Image (tube, rainbow, N blue to C red; front, side, top):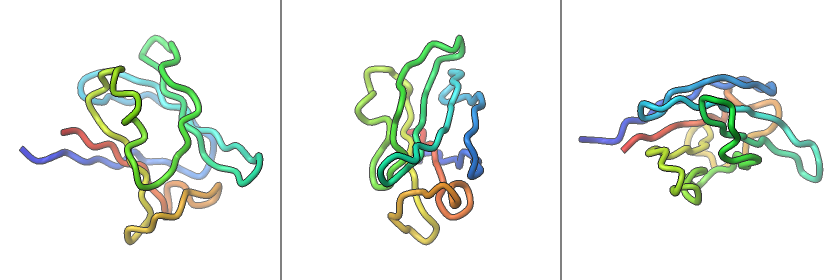
Amino acid sequence: MANQIYEIPLSATPQSFGISISGASYSLRFSYCAADQGGWLLDLSDSSGNALVSGIPLVTGSDLLAQYSYLGIGAALYVAGDGGSSDAPTFANLGTTTHLYVMIP
């Protein structure tokens, strides 16, 4: 069976919402940190609101959850730009030309 890949729809604004990944419910919170060069950060909580991981930078080129495999989420999160671009998401282009994808093996 091939991997299932879904885009998590985002907009270029701080936001929070619930999502189901591999049958479990999570809460995602996206915030923008303007310090230094700036960048988007992801906080991941369980369905009860307990923080699992805070401050994951949205960067391209790697699985954002790889170092948290001990959580047993059973999926990978990737950021990618249109046309395979490896540019990091900016405040203005998140959800328009850079996208967040969940891959379920």
